[in-house]
Length: 588
Image (cartoon, rainbow, N blue to C red; front, side, top):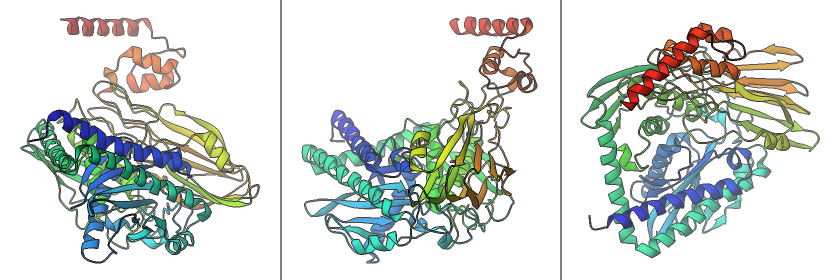
């Protein structure tokens, strides 16, 4: 290597900073709360040769790591084959076609070439979740769609910006096919501005160090990421590790879908085999290949977070194409649930398979649902239509050292739920409850984190509610003797009468009028280790804080606690003895 280590480190940090600034620009300039407040977006730098990932923002959604890489690669290939118009400086492509390296239709990707001396040096790309792209239901989460056309407008790669100018004709076609189209220009300009900021910041790095030096640094960083990942993978003893994860249903056929996984570890590499998983399904829980691959990558990133994000980190991960399963969707299979829900079941399958091999690194299953809730209708006070998209967190699984985080973001991202104050300002809703879902964490030596319990009311007008969630039939599984977290719960009150969707976590087009309410309880995380091994003092503290009742403490952990969180004398003695032994052991 001719580049010195200090320069290499500075360039690495600089590339990361470029992506971070793109992320920040995108969120700050966006109109929609799902981007501006929830940060459901991501930005990255990609190779001009094959679209491989060079760097991604630290605060971008991990599930987009793989999908934008494959989407950019597909765009490059289509340009080379003259299937897409070749770019010139200032052009920005738009695409949301899931089958061309994407997720679902609401995740809209922009891609822009960065030129140096008349040649494309790299591509900048970002993805933002648009609140609506048309389709059968507001928000795009059609729980009973049977073809992708029912989910919204599907865009092949086209140049939305040509030499820096928005193409009014293409934009008018988009606006003619989506709801609340007058609000989209804010998100479109924010998404494009993020790329332009990235180009400006990247140009400064290239001007300072020279194109050749930066190219050399990128190549070296990829090699190092690959080697570092291989070193970590050697911690896994050679062998085959198996697991099964379940999706509640596909939204059409009320039967669970199976994700069967066999991971073969050998010499610093992992091979992932999903053959034996359920066949392609009728409903929207099919996963396109890019999302399936990205789900594997993000799961391993959760286990080994110290490996820098680049294409090199993925090289030791070999995924056999799951032909003939619902994890390799082809047109016209509906896919609205793939990125938000199926991806998390794939990650869960990876965690469950590897937890015994890496008990100090792998957690019990997290909530594993983005809690997709879309509400669309008419607000008479403002005399306009609206589309509200609510995502929500849940409990993380317990681990070898700690209890799981409560109300954490979904496995696939770093996005956060928009503040309820913002939602009440933007939409005709009133939140009656927004709190931790007490008792939802799976019991264990280290219990799972707690989910979220929220309830909202439609204050005026009329609307239609749709849900694409998961873990309503099965709670997130505990590991090593830990208990499962509580499953997802959806309850809708109409005219004072309550109803639970037939598919538990999935429904669409439920009509609501003023005064009708929706209550959601998101899943708690799975427990880690035997519940009877939990420190009684920790159980007492949970009871004192209202997280569990005394009855639950006795039933789940076999610990007697008063309603004020006081242990009985025998439990106190046992807890003190346990702490004393642990203290003397560690000091020795």
